[in-house]
Image 1 (cartoon, rainbow, N blue to C red):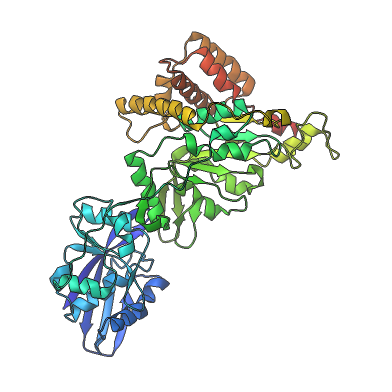
Image 2 (cartoon, rainbow, N blue to C red; image 1 turned 180 degrees about the horizontal axis):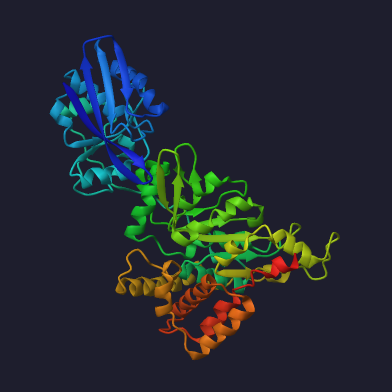
Length: 512
């Protein structure tokens, strides 16, 4: 007799069904697991054996064969322990074989028979719910699985013994409830920033439209301080966005206790990060920082200090909103619709733009150009706002805090985002909630400038050498500025302000 237990294998954020087939037959005493599993799957034999012994069950002196079907699908991770153990228990009659027919099972076993948490419970629960099945998962992951559906039958046992008692009717397990992560204190407030009024304005525009932003200024000007306060003015995640973000964080194991939060992600990797760490990859094709920042902010401090190849790998995800990681045996696609915020010094010493400063190696303009040439033109062309953040004088620091803080700015940002969400919903664009994510053909329709604005854009296009991408990004930025003003049409003033944040990307290359 062959006992079948349903579980899943993960490809990106998708949970594909896997059939765990357990057969106990006469022959040489052996415990074999087949089906293209990795090292963690092969080691599950010893964990299952020890867990069953700790639960008072001994493996029969027979040949035990476990097949993970389909056999050509790679199986990775330790979550196959529990379905294998339950299959063996059903095959030897420790639990009724029909008790597991309507459940998808995943979980890792400890040597004492307890069931420990695993990654990917939320996508597994959603896949089980789509197939009309319940879910058996570790107790620590039950709160995460409960988010999939109110009608989903979730069993979250602490140990194998508790699960067996439940099936025998000796113990009833309470259904887990969805958990909400408690706010970890107040976010940094814009009221802490003194001076830098133009940079604050650019930060507000970037938050309102989801635009990419680059701060350029000397050390200590407050660039990182401004970027750290961007989450305080961003609107909370919508239910659709919350689900997408939580799926990625579930796969990566970042959902602490299965609790979800509507705060937008803010990821700030160090400039020594590798390409696999930033865009995703590795032996198991795990999501990178850009996917963990989905619907949130990716902050790159000291931008030119990143490896040029790593920075250029961001160009395609910025445009498409997803990243495809290809391996010899499979291809994984992760969502990556992030908002890029970066900060940099004008040169290596950082003071080339200071009044009266003269570089002792070469002219200031050439020093700036050589340092900034580490950034490619195509990457700079994808950044909507280029903002100069000058040094703050001591007189500004001694002033009292500004009257306007993050709460006032967040209210204006939320109003602008509501206008954009309503606009694109009326156009039938599902999943587009900001101007930055709108297709170019649509932005030409909703951000059509007046006659004066067209003349202004044409003149600036020749002077700034705007690419086709740059032209559309100017329109998106002007549309966001108009939304902040509550204007229905894009006027010359909106376009003029949008153009003021654009730089000639070839200027540094000519100076170098």
